[in-house]
Amino acid sequence: MRLTRLYVDAPLDPGGLLELPADAAAHVARVLRARDGDPVVLFNGDGREFESRIETVRGMRVAVAIGAAHAIARESPIALTLLQCLPRGDRMDWIVQKATELGVARIVPLVSRRSVVKLSATQAESKVAHWRAIAVAACEQSGRNRVPTIDAPRGLDEHLGAIGAAGMRFVFDPDASPQAAPAARADAAAPTALDFAIGPEGGFEPQELDGLRIAGFHGVRLGPRILRTETAALAALVWLQTRFGDLRGA
Image (cartoon, rainbow, N blue to C red; front, side, top):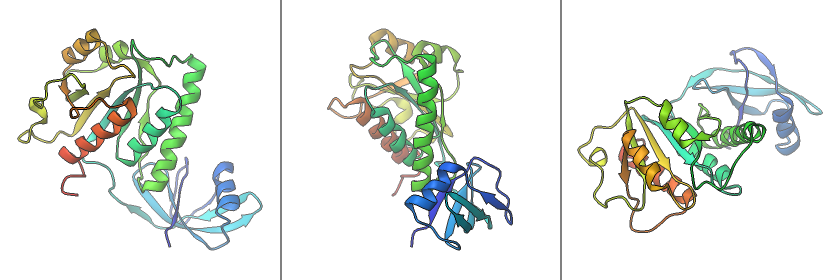
């Protein structure tokens, strides 16, 4: 039987007893219908998971006995940062979920010139909290013990002005040369960190692509077809993990 995995934003110490936060407790008691003694795995994002068991279920209050800690490596060997221009509707939710499952380490939501979605400061704060909850749920499902960082939305120019000079960087552009960028060729050394940028509906404007190239982003084409922004994000991530990360030889 597959064990239930729960994220807890709290210190976890083997041998201790923890009362679950209200949301997690409600999920365990109401949805999973857990009982005293049921096994559960806890993690708090520090890279470990804790072999635990439910001590008591009393209404919507659930106490868990924390067991042995195990440092299990399920993270990609490269720290992947997705620079994603905000799409319309709930597509960002889907991107966050799938990117988390595929091992992205950081997501930076961007607003570019062709972006349709514009968020106020209050809306942005609410969205980040919502996306983080989606990432946490994806970690629970996929077995990851580290939750990816999700930044507050920012303008593309603002982000490019703040990044340093080092690191491998790609921008996925349907108009890029079919010839792979030099850094993407088979003889290129695998990086320890990599940033990749995905444009909005309609793509980046030429001036934005120029800015990305000045900042060290190599243009790469994802085949002969034009992909939707959410499709491009996942296709790019799979390609990067296959080329450099933990999908090689899978």
